[in-house]
Length: 308
Image (tube, rainbow, N blue to C red; front, side, top):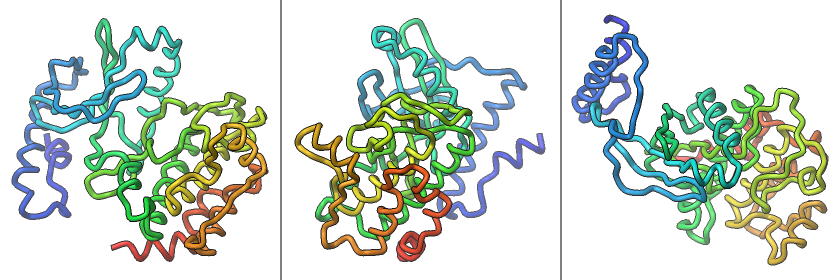
């Protein structure tokens, strides 16, 4: 019981005016765990109060929900089996669950548990209170982030990807829509639907989002985790400009610009940021700046320090 007491104790950094409510919630959680007496718990939809919708994808709907006994807020993602079978995505969903279950990092959205019934699969996800980063980007003056904000987000995405790559996971779909913000405004890397566990580090499947595709995917060559390096460069550009660097009205033009690494910088993007972006957007994957070097790049370090 002593271990439980230590586990369910309010953290010292918790604001004093919130400690009472937080401790009450932790006590409910502890009682819930103790009542199980070490036995696994079979979750069901009846364990949750369903709230407002948070988002909708092609195969899933996401709702704000609350676990009834502890009042713990989560995001509940519902996937309809019939839609998955029709689109032959059963293996993809199983892969997504397996990958996200094993990734534990402050900047990666946690998959807390999952369960299913006759018609649906339910993913119980950490609730990112501030929602999609893409919406915040659109709401910024001129539709772009300040340099300190962009540097902070680039650093956190790089750290999350570094963790993925340690476990041989390639995300393959980095973009603002797949990044969430928690209550403190920190990045939560989400949506592992296109991710793959690749111990051999070699893949040929073309997937992801057109504007973020690297040259090796566009030309059908084998690729490895360095595709995520390229996506981080595109992401950094979009943070600072408000649109991806290879965006064109015609799909063929986008492909051409990607293969040519045809990047045009607006005047407001200063040389230190250009340096980082140019070192990530390299045609040869082996020439791209490693994630650990991104995190200590002078622009990232200098600008991130300016965040209030």
